Length: 117
Ligand SMILES: [Zn+2]
Image (cartoon, rainbow, N blue to C red; front, side, top):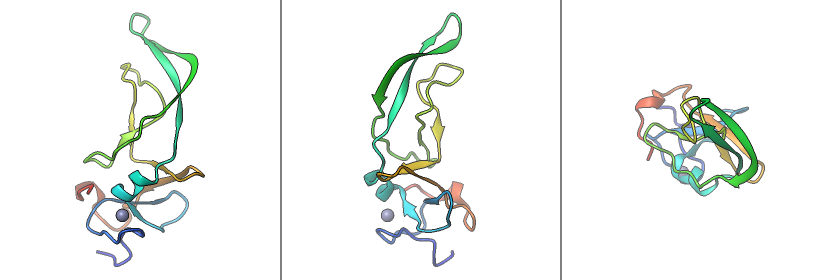
């Protein structure tokens, strides 16, 4: 494994790591990312199961703090999907006060098989 494949904060290696969308470094692990997640708001939708469509309610709500799951995913803030689930999932993590998007650092590793923690 690439010697640069380690978390910049805790030095962890051999786990899923993320890097900024625009750059290959720094890399960050799920645990350190969880501690640095951005406070996010999302647009509330109501799902109409008879019409099978989602409607914006006009309210903005705070997104619950996420934990990265075993697949390296967190709830997205995009609102309900076509089946009316409240959140879809994404591997993009939004971190820090400037809401930087971090994406899987999967260039040189078999990212999907690495453990999350
Ligand atoms: Zn870390």
